[in-house]
Amino acid sequence: MGRQYTVLEINNQDMRILVGRKHKAHAQIQHIYHLALPQNARSAQDVYDPAVLIPFLKDIFSSLGLKKKHLIVSIVEKSLTCYTHLFPTSSIKNLDGLVDRFVMNLSPKASQHYGGDYTILSSGEEGIWVRINLLDQALTKSLYDSFTGAGLQPIALIPHSDALDCIMGSAKLLNLVQHDIKSPYGLIDYQGDTISLSLFQNGHLIFYQALYPKANLDNYNFLEILNNTYLGQYPSTIPKSMHPKLFYLSGTIKNPIKAREILEKRLGKPVAVIRATSAIQYAKPHSAEIVQNLTAAGCILLAPFCFRKKHLCSNFFKTWIGPKIKRKRIKVLLGAAILALILTFTLLLWNQQSKLNKARNDLMAEQVEFKLLQNEARTRNIHWYEQEITATKQQLNQLLKAIDSIKDEQNWNSEQIRVVTNLTPEDIILEEIDGNPDTLFIQAHADSRLRIAKYEALLKDSSQFEEIFISHISSLNVEGVPTYTFTVECTLEKGGSENES
Image 1 (spheres, helix red, strand yellow):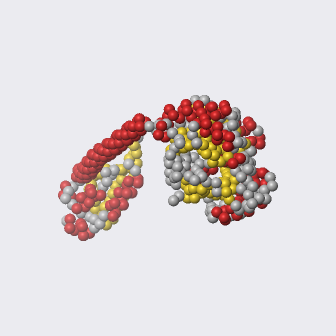
Image 2 (image 1 turned 180 degrees about the vertical axis):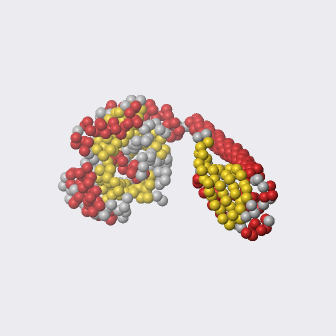
Image 3 (image 1 turned 120 degrees about the vertical axis):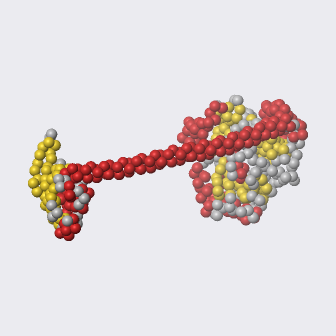
């Protein structure tokens, strides 16, 4: 069903309540109540006095059974002023800044009451027409506090031109639905310095034109302008089947009856006055008595239609009306759909190709890594074999040196000589091995005393010798390299010597 909103328009001449609902695609005005002014309001300014206004509104809300939530208060006449200004078309991207600068240049008072609210009325080659609304901030705060204290809970205090936009909850174009009037109709609205002509078909806006004359509705020149606008622009863009059967007249008109008669003669169409200042009767016996001024068809839109910031073109709907334009629109949509499909398939193919390239690169990287591991393993094996060969050569060299150093050939196969040979490191050079069945004498040399000490420790750890004694350590200098010669006396174990013998 949509959320229900209540818009209260406060005027120092009359007041009205608009009850509407916001739907997903449009806003619908359900009821419009024209109210008599409070009986205890002695002057126009008393209408804004909370002591007069709040009790009156609480009585009205109670009588009508209206909800106190989602209330929007629209201040009509109490706006300090509404400035209409023409800005260059090229300034659309920086329109907010230009409006702010324009208000600041007006007067310090104007800049204090400007809250950033403006309405784009039309946009064309001549420029961008903008209406700037200035609200009395002190009055706004006073009314807001008074409404909140009375439990009415207003969600917004706005100028008159934004009332229906707030029902919609956004700056989108409003589709104001009129269930009882399905035939085309027009709306002529006059608000001081702006006259707007709006045409509707089944409640939907199909044409909008804003005029800025220097006269009122009773002036012949304005009627001539309106007649030329209607006859010159409207029939050329809208089919005959959509021409309005009647017009509604709304606004602050001094003499609405006379204006209606003149318009009916000029337009050749019936004109109904749905809201005009002099058409409201104020003298009522009691403040709770309500004038429900609805026509038999159900009164619809009573406020001027304005394009908001994001909808700048006053001919927005023209390009989508007529069979040729519809066919063109279908072609455009079909082309856009085909282009979207092509882009989608292109993106899918590009994505799959990217995945294949990534998989191929990963496979090549794994192959390179596998080859590196193979080469590393081969290198490790070769290095191990080289170390083994080197160690074997060292042992063989030591053995050959030991054999060369043995004087008594009968000791070649002794176990002690084999042990000495195995325990002798590469940095110990054996020069001569001699001895008897009980003792071995080894003559050798090394490049430091530390190596001699380590060699002594190795021999002492062997179980083949009972005692190891190092002697005759002397230092030599051969070609600048220090060399130490020494003698090792190895006393054999008794058991070992007996077995050897």
